[in-house]
Amino acid sequence: MKYLRIVAATLTGVLVFFSCKSQYEVLLASNDVDAKYNAAMEYFQNKKYQKAAQLFESLAVLTSGTARDDTVQYYWGLSNYRFKDYYTAESNFARFVENFPRSPFAPDAQFYRLDCLYRATYRWELDQKPTHACMAAIRQYLREYPGDDIHREACEGMLHNLQDRLDRKDFEAGKQYYVMEDYPAARIKLRNVLKSNADNFYREDVLYYTAMASYHYARLSVKAKMKERYLVFVDDYLNFVGEYPESHYRKELDGLYQGVQNYLKKN
Image (cartoon, rainbow, N blue to C red; front, side):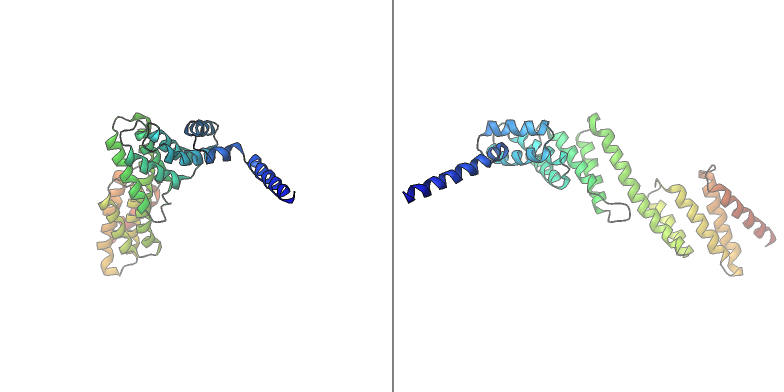
């Protein structure tokens, strides 16, 4: 009798345990591919992306090598992407592109991977290695899919933003010498910025600080060197106003130039 009571209690516990499991948990543990696949798609459509991602992940083993393989793998990555788990999504999409290069999902998977890489880049003040890697991946994508008008604008926008960061970092590195009042080094560094990239987004600022550096260097020089160094400022000034005649820096530089012209007439 005691034995029967123990068995009954055990069975009751098991039944209670399984009755407490949610439908989702049952599906997650199930090997019913159709039921799991339909549920995963339903969760995805209802924007329950974390649950969808877990179901697609568990499905990936069951559908490997079948007609649903690329669909499951793609939606696994897309679910993580929509859930804003960009690190996992990037891994999903990178693996997808490698395994299914001819899938109809491949262009979108490649684009979403780029977006994940883009989101992993840092502000201009920090390490720009991820920026360079992302830009290389975007350019490769544009070469591989030249007719993709859907994502082209977004890709070009990302490239523009990333190039801006690189240009800002180069400009700020040169400007830092100016802030530290190392004017000869500032002028050299700033000129090198434009030598390496003449189309730097901060070209106007670079030319302004180049002229300012040459002016202060001349102003602080010994008298025997002033005339020679003020002439360098004149060249920098003329370069600046030739390119940016309407610049907001113009008034300040014009005042300095007039003062230098007066000095040169007297000397």
